[in-house]
Image (cartoon, rainbow, N blue to C red; front, side, top):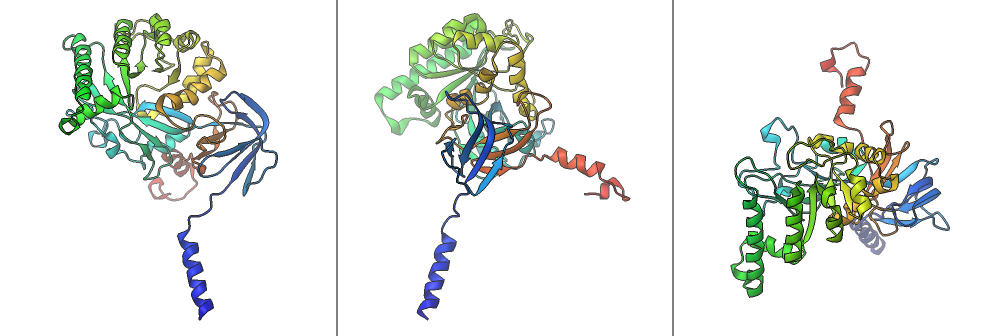
Length: 405
């Protein structure tokens, strides 16, 4: 009887303990560490479900060992400034949750995030493992707050909600741009004065967000193009000592030295090559190289349809064709956005999150494919809905296509 009870207790303990994390080693890889170690040939990386454990350990010990056969292995790419998980079909209003007429600085769009969106596996095909989702707000100049997701398709994939604040400034088809710039200045001034009084009980939710900006607990992401607007924002940053990131910033090359001196990063689309407004007269394919040469930290995004976010690596490749080195382009889609958005990824180094991609060839080439990828150490599929439809309609069958699976 005693042995029976012992067995029951042992079984209960065994079923209550979490499963041991599987350790995986990728050997014989060309590791693009995106660290001071640079590119390591014939290298080994070891990781588990939490993080990267070792690079080139003296002895390889792992449950699973994968021979990369010399293929490139990089950190997972980081997408941003899109509405993945908030927009399923852009033309269908009931599948759009990224904006609302009443949205303001407190808008938390993460509550509407759908980790089962068909856009997510499609985006993974571009090697993107982490994404910073950005709402497009409503009538207010503040568009809401960003949130960070892992693109693993799980219900707990939102890793940070209410992260940073997005504001839209610049030209307006109805009135002067000066109004919003003036309003932003006054709101920060009022929040600074209220913070000094420390009367927390009377602070509204919107003001709490402004206080977080002043305390540098949040960053202000300003969507702006014209050089004169950028200079106004740099002055605002100095006046209130806030963290600032420029988004879009087509005219940033005109004031590149000022942006670098202020230590303000730029999130931009490397494929933006034509002026699409009078605010963006200096846009060009070599802007990323010009800003990087001036000392500005640059991260890439893909503007336009959210479904095109997977093209991030192609945009980086075009930046290489227009003046960036391959290393700088890889940094613009890995370590630079990781540092700008505060993500513990973007590099292959012990302690970093195990977001890893093995490619068939050069990641920036059109013909290259993702061979295997891991998010938080778990292997994920890159098969999309489009792949399944393709397979369905090329499958041999005597039945009508609507009957095949």
